[in-house]
Amino acid sequence: MCKLIITKFIGLTTRVKATSDAGWLSIGWDGSLDSRANHTKAARALATEKAWTGSWTRICLPDNGGYVFLRDPVPRARLRW
View 1 (cartoon, rainbow, N blue to C red):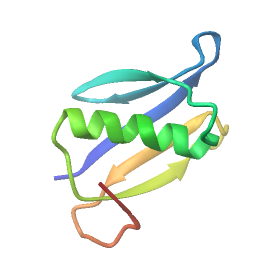
View 2 (spheres, one colour):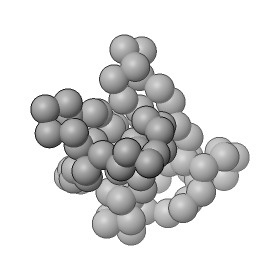
View 3 (cartoon, helix red, strand yellow):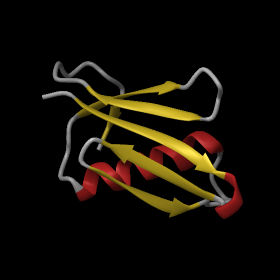
View 4 (cartoon, rainbow, N blue to C red):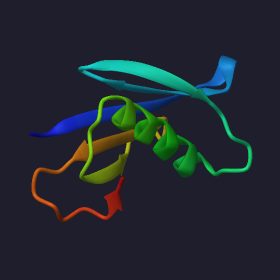
């Protein structure tokens, strides 16, 4: 089954929020990581909390304000956790 996670940077709190149809969570910004890695970390945390595993595709949102992570039912994506 397909799963979708959207991440956004929350500037005032310096946090990254990961949202899906099953809930959300936010994590603090890690200054030792770049933006992409911080968003991936948030998506991975939500996927882990929901016990979602498998292959994931990461897509940058058009406004550069975050990412979409899509769990692909056909294992062909590059991201694994």
